[in-house]
Image 1: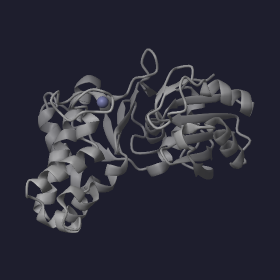
Image 2: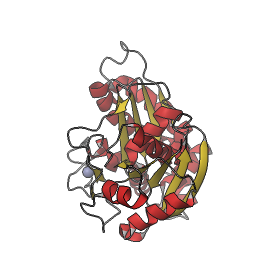
Image 3: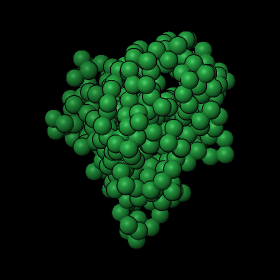
Length: 314
Ligand SMILES: [Zn+2]
């Protein structure tokens, strides 16, 4: 038996076929560009499912945005043309097999729990730090979906009411401070303030041009000022993880997304700060904070497992 998982990203849709009994083995894989604004997405997904040549028994889709329990996408930040689209129903009708749709971060968590860094954990938290923050919460072995399907959006927890504005309309959301966007801001602020000479040199001498990549490259070369910026980022990451742990008490926290490339520079300080910020840090079991292992495949593998029962079948 095979199922197909389709992970809709900002630039590409990655499709895989797997046997759900062996989720770590990808039977077929294919990718296509994400259509601009999401126009014609259903046609693209149907074509991609066909290109995998798998004759699947079911199809799962992970998509960035608010997906309700019926598999309707209410809105996605990068899919402007899709509003209140009953994706699961449309795909079921077109494909002739049951289609299930869930938020992409939930799919990442399902994938890491089934075959990745959270394997074997019934209580886990998978947080992806990219331009923003996506998260999936697994509790009792299943994704926590909430009353309407919108649970697991900690990126918009306010952690600094006087912090930078967020596109969501609030200020100081966690994802403004602890993501790749947050790293770029911390780096520019430090550079403009006259610190980070070596990092500014990497950016061609322009403090305004400093990026997160310049900081991590410089820190990896031993620059203490660059490492200090990463330590400041680590504190913001740890603050949100500690808040979530106080609520959810996970067995393991898995860190994914683009920042995972700098895990060796970030995670030691994240763990140190986490231990001081979480309630009763020295009195409770250590919560491992570990990098994701499935990389870009996590979301598609998780999507392929949605029909197993964690998502929203039409
Ligand atoms: Zn926000």
